[in-house]
Length: 102
Image (cartoon, rainbow, N blue to C red; front, side, top):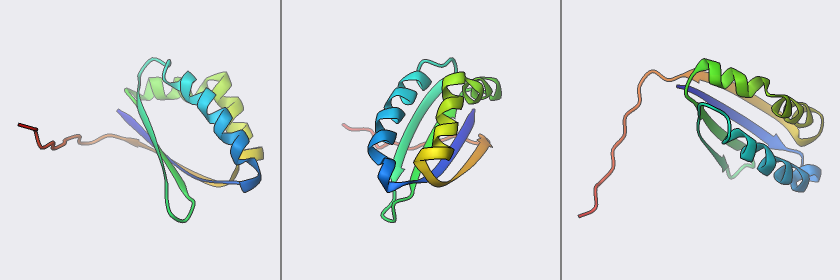
């Protein structure tokens, strides 16, 4: 599994436009082969963090290179973000705990 951690800060003047566009891009991402999941969070200081999971390097690369996603990346740099950081990681371990309800 490939996990991308995408940290960013939005330019205040483009937030409404960003959220409308982000919805469209997310709808596209979920249709991509190998897409596992995506969650986003906003910290108290305004930093946004998205965690995106793909099943393999190949499927992750296909999403990275998708023409519509490339347009979104460019819009992010030119319009939406005041800054960002992308970290792409290979999963080494995966385990969980869940208290089963009786």
